[in-house]
Length: 199
Image (cartoon, rainbow, N blue to C red; front, side):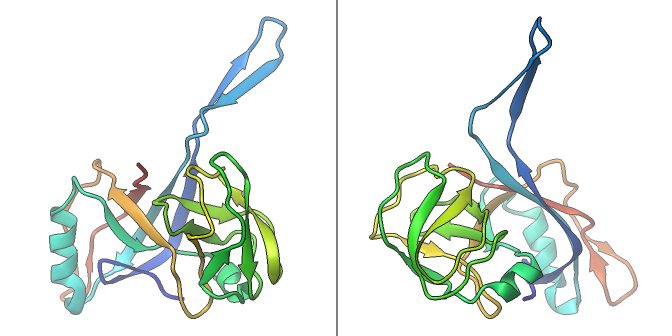
């Protein structure tokens, strides 16, 4: 599956990083203590290839709207997407409260470890942490559920033909905003850094 940012094809290498602040302290007896507030967001870094057809869209898109969140399809690992055989929209079989690490769904196929998923009532993206077969199954996720889900919500995933997982993001404000016109055919924005927009 090919992924796009503002109409331009995303090129490898693509970096997907989990930002989860952890506090680390050495005690007087030299034992280690670690604590986390449970906050986590995904951060992406990539470049794109821009042709004449997407140049104007990319230039306008890079310069305007820096203060607002935008959306795009969340890139997935190719090996994970090709192994996924489930539908991209699945029913949630049992409600789950905030803070749990798995959600029970009714799956018609395999959901692979490493799949990025989303729930219909969330702006947050989660990752499946173990392979899940077809049936009514508990899907282990990372990070822990931020907001409760009920059977009226849906579980959104990707397979080799489609994706229902949409990333809400902000562009990193430290990025220079613009376009470099190089050879009369291609242009470049340089590295694009996105951070997950979570409320």
